[in-house]
Amino acid sequence: MKILVTGGAGFIGSNLSVTLMQNKPIAADKIVVIDNLSLGNIAFISELLTSPDFVFYQIDLLDFDNLLNIFTEHKFDLVWHLSANSDIRYGAKHTDWDLKQNTLVTYNLLECMRRTGTKKIIFASTSAIYGLAKIVPTPEDYGPLFPISLYGAGKLASEGLITAFCDNFEMQSWIFRFGNIVGKNGTHGALVDFIKKLRKNPDELEILGNGKQAKPYLHVTDCIDGMIFGFENVNDRVNYFNLACKGATPVDTLADTVIRHMNLTGVRKHYTGGEIGWVGDVSQVRLDHRKLERLGWSSRYTSDESVEKGVEELLLQIK
Image 1 (cartoon, helix red, strand yellow):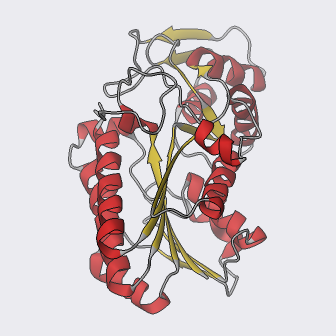
Image 2 (cartoon, helix red, strand yellow; image 1 turned 90 degrees about the horizontal axis):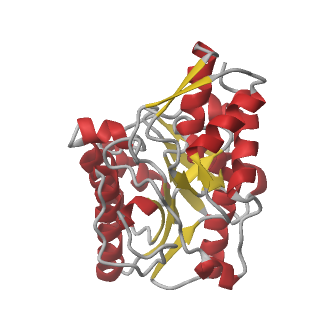
């Protein structure tokens, strides 16, 4: 089996690439990674570069001709699509960014799949597609879907393209909607921001919003394990799941955990105020993840445990 991992040098993608190469949980014979390194880091996958079963391309998925050449050369059996703009605030300032880096790149992948006979795609979606859901915890069949961020809109449009391609061209998809992921190789998010801010000024920490925003934080190893489980155990044309853990962790707890692990005292917290951290932010997220649980999968770590583990791992990397 030949697997393409897009965004494979990024946060989740690098952890997935290492897992696939080291454990080969789905009998992968060759792993090909594409990443433009805008958020990814080649150092995250440096240990894989010398393997004859691993190939890395630094290109942007918007480069359709080069992308098609890669598909034509390798004849992939499975595409694991993790590449995306993951900075919601950046997308709000540059309004075509999520259209390009979430939606259009997904179309390019699907069209390359159609032209070269690749039939299976695993897609990293997001809880942001639900917007300000009125049912909490939010199940997979919630609707209507009105995302409030351009990031969520780009991901929802990508889901629509994927399901349409599946129906029109006899493809299969596995769509996973998750919230905040934490752990080794993290490149963005509150934990990364807090550590960087406190490295710069250990006396004061700026916290966006009021600190009461709370979401389920899933450890990256659980994220990967859940996606692999769903792929191996469900075989409909379109398969879709919330991927989450037990509990939800407030931003204030994130800050306190970082401060504690950094052995800091007397840190002054400065709140920017308001119920949300930025425009497009959903302040309270709870996902109904019983669909995967009924199939036999649950996360190893709770949200708070994921945060503890994530902080420990990030402090070893962020200097």
